[in-house]
Image (cartoon, rainbow, N blue to C red):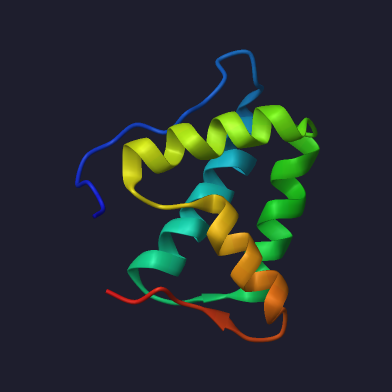
Length: 93
């Protein structure tokens, strides 16, 4: 169940550009759960996110923190996008 007000798991050592990239990715994950998002745009946002967070362990930590805060799984959204890269991702509401 999504929560109305939550904070994003951000690293305060990131530059403004890096934070923007991570937030852009989280916003696309939110769209997958709250509406519909293009799988290719989600995957593009994920690639940019991975430039900021190349470590798999750090990615998992951020995904877990984001899911605990929002109820949305980055992993699940990316898996759905990879399964259908030319389509749309929507977990519906």
